[in-house]
Image 1 (cartoon, rainbow over the protein chains, first blue to last red):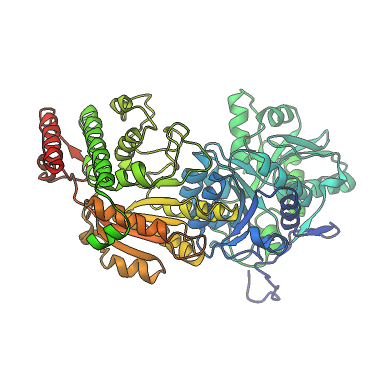
Image 2 (tube, rainbow over the protein chains, first blue to last red):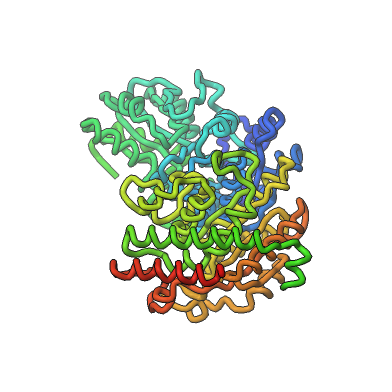
Length: 336
Length: 293
């Protein structure tokens, strides 16, 4: 950032992650939860003073009797959600990813995961989805949570995933953590032959030259990059989407990587402790020696600023993904 | 207290029966302590009267069916008091008394820190302090939402546990949601791991703290069975779906009922020589028989 550049509006909290031309769906989580609750009276919603910012307000308006504003008290919210699950309800509790993970970890672990309760934490602003700075950028949320036994971790790519994950999470007996995309959420997976399944990685797009194993919003970026690479460079890229990060579908991912194609991972998360390391562990365990180029956030506290600027800077933009693939094709043995 | 006792119909037979249970719980605590040679025996002996009143008189539950959906909930957030809970569960008939011998042993259902997943009748996995009251808030809210606010939620906390800020988040929340179906019991024994509670993080003016948060407060001698039963009666008689949550602040004496242990220095985690356990049991029995006369 330089002082002479024109000021970009940071729109820190409400920045959209949609690329130009990608349609969006408003508040898919809130609507999906409200719809599910209309069919299942065990569904309850909680938030820690962030209903409007986590799309919980849609549920609150539809089912005010089953909506609980718990105040700015994340430890309490998660503990209370566990208490509700213990008496037979199915709670969905929302806050930002930083607060759910950094602040309420012990409560999710001991109150919900250890007893195996159906507590569903739905956390907005995962990874780098706000320009607000390190207080709100949950660059390590998956790294924090991956070691928690019995927790299922979802990283939806778009509104299609979000809408499928809500009923799937409710149907699972144990606790879940979902990296929520909220607000105007891109909708892209319905262009492909794709169905969400808990615990399954899916080949969303085939391709003979390159394979990108991705999760979350980086699946959207990978798909858009794959289209560009095909149209502009004649490079065919396969995209393997991991909507469930834990348990991790090692079998599918390793099978897709154990080829001669250039391989990359793409995640909206630090390269420490997230998708890349899950992939690396799966490969090593099976004795597959394969160079994988990680696309992800650096192991650092990131800048504040406008989200598009930051995605460009840290390599999460569609163009940055295209550049990494082309660079990898030119120099397949380089690493960074 | 006598007048209140009479008014509430607190009869001698009831008190006697609960006193018998308290003795049984204390003896069960000593048996578990002896099996391991050490443990949180002081706290367990101190809280035995409260647990006897809860498990053997007040709590609505079915010992033969600990998962009965219509039960009251009793949450032990202070997981290290588990041996007291196990002895109470045995006294109430939820687990076999002989099982107390397995306390903290490999493969036992009775781990040193109380866990929902190990032991019938344990409602939460405690041990990390400051977790119980938040879960109690959720249960009380959930039961009320389901039209079951007559099923009460109890949470046993300790004064050391009040250091944890999450407890006060939950205290605010219980009052905010008017959880009149929630009863918190706080063991004020004045000691925590590093020393006296007053020296570590001052927790004075307990009545004022809870009262200012919007709770209905009673403070009692937690080793006076009539006082314990009376306070519980007041709380449960006033329990409603929407009203002030109840807290009973219980001053207790560590290792109560066993003079040889009461006199020890390091009461937070007691190590007792093998030859002292028979003496401890004799003292407990002697004191009980004297009070029974």
